[in-house]
Length: 280
Ligand SMILES: Nc1ncnc2c1ncn2[C@@H]1O[C@H](COP(=O)(O)OP(=O)(O)OP(=O)(O)O)[C@@H](O)[C@H]1O
Image (cartoon, rainbow, N blue to C red; front, top):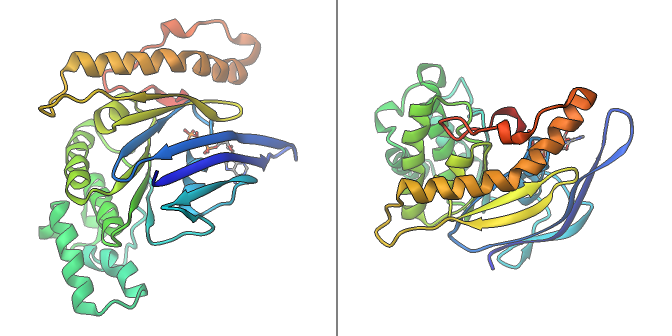
């Protein structure tokens, strides 16, 4: 296994100074080159797990290894793409993408050539000299993906990268991300609120339970030999994930709404876009 997550426990201290267990015994193996999505109710610890894999935070106990090496801090082989593109507004697209390579002291011409290559991959060749404020949300997120890819990571950690985008842009970026994944063979660890997005993009969907966060089930996404998955198969997989999540969503609603809680999640339907809104 390439990315191994073993017996991870993580707690935080909340506003009332109470210790709250967020992740409770997470075990997960991710194969090199695979595309794995994590879905689960809001607050179940998805981002916390991603930050631990990124080395941006430390677990209370347990181990995360990449290719056998213990993760103790951020590293260039694990790059994060966040929901907000987070570009430097005073730098051009090209300068934003070469920024990390300059920090690594890569010769300027080599850095520029690499950046132009990845900008081509994300279809931004025409915008290399533009500034972030001149770009749409989808284009900014493409720059952010290019900025990650230029570091040639082994693992791309994506924390709801498309959730702030409109549906059409999101669909285009889905296709582009799949093309990039196939071309670069990078391992993708993808967090989303959108069940359909998880099913359309990934090979496996890890469904989290909440309070504390733990893995409830891992659902393999069926792929057809010709690469074209019929809508009925996608819908069935979505439905299966939704039914696993129902109990968890209900738990969150009960806690949030308290005594006023009176409806059941069989009234919950995913939207046409597959998004379950703020509860997952
Ligand atoms: N630095 C922190 N200090 C205290 N509590 C934190 C911290 N980071 C996260 N938490 C808490 O841990 C829990 C899990 O948060 P996390 O962001 O990992 O959940 P999530 O599943 O990604 O949620 P969402 O889907 O809403 O983004 C939440 O209750 C959150 O408030």
